[in-house]
Image (cartoon, rainbow, N blue to C red; front, top):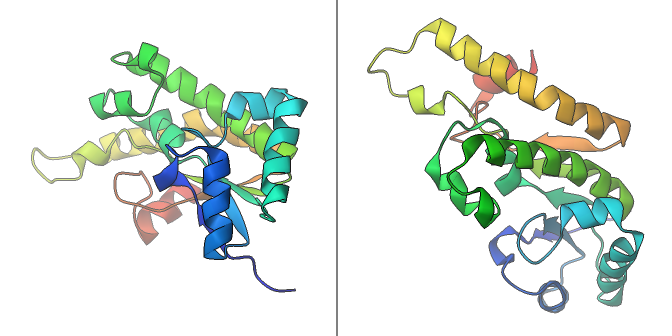
Length: 194
């Protein structure tokens, strides 16, 4: 069996999904990792509306594209970040400036994304966790070990209910270890997993 060569649609989420499918097919890709924001996939609709799922699958089939993973980076970043005004760029406009409402929307959306992935026949969702402690990375003023531990515990508390929904639906969550996340290198990733 050959390996699929897929393209994540994150950078082109402003394009219409059919235009994205046309371009990916023309470039020779086997599939798409659909962004769960912008114009490519509405997570709530894909979790709750069979007609919408059939539309998305039909569009992918028309262009001979597979979808085995969804991308949730923008939404997942909002789960554990604390009161960062830059998140206003990621959330629905009505939530701008309301960090706790942004978090609630992100948590609910991540749960929808797990179900949407199952409905679309995907096995994986890629994304971030956000981090309540990334802002403390610089060493002055001093960051205590207790502050770091509290941040890891906060991420744990926010993410375990989301990951339960992923497990219930048989979907893997692929955390992108990345700067600005609580898991940004080998050691922080190991700590998060522990």
